[in-house]
Length: 195
Image 1 (cartoon, rainbow, N blue to C red):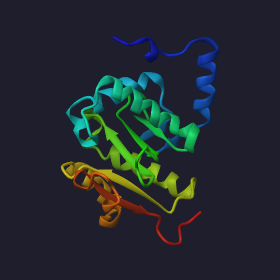
Image 2: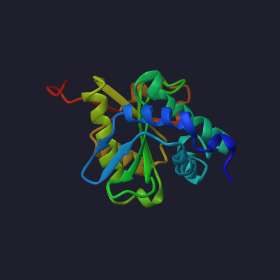
Image 3: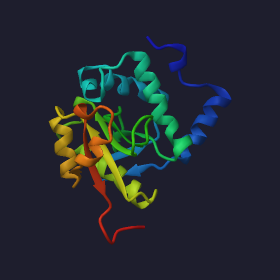
Image 4: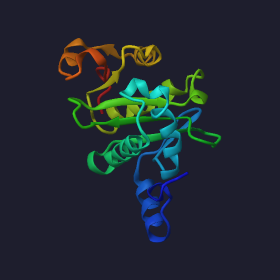
């Protein structure tokens, strides 16, 4: 059951939401589309963060926490010029995951994050989508570095970060209030590729 605040807007509000969404960067890769989140994408987001998969991001979250997190990451586009993308296959269909460039409350640095549903795993989609988002951080936003905060038990996320060339940054890890609960993987723009 959807709550009233989870229903798609109507009328003028829907037009404004569509207009804002069209202003956000849309990324296409060989197999994927990374697009602005829509209110109906919350169902997929919630499936990730309220399930056992949520344990890697401090959860599982409650529905209320998931809704607030989804809103915060989406609002990042308006407030900070970076935020959450919904990932779907180029051939359309339901979302398979999410990637983000965000500077969340309490984090010392901007983050490159990734959350995928089971149907989005095992095909290289996460690497493809996350690489595209990382390139936006470097090429469009002009960032020189971005980090991925990863739960030490999340071996798949560690493998993905390393596949993308990120390296564990123990000095950055020591700056976190919850030192034992998180690894920091640093992505650095390769020299000579600055925009």
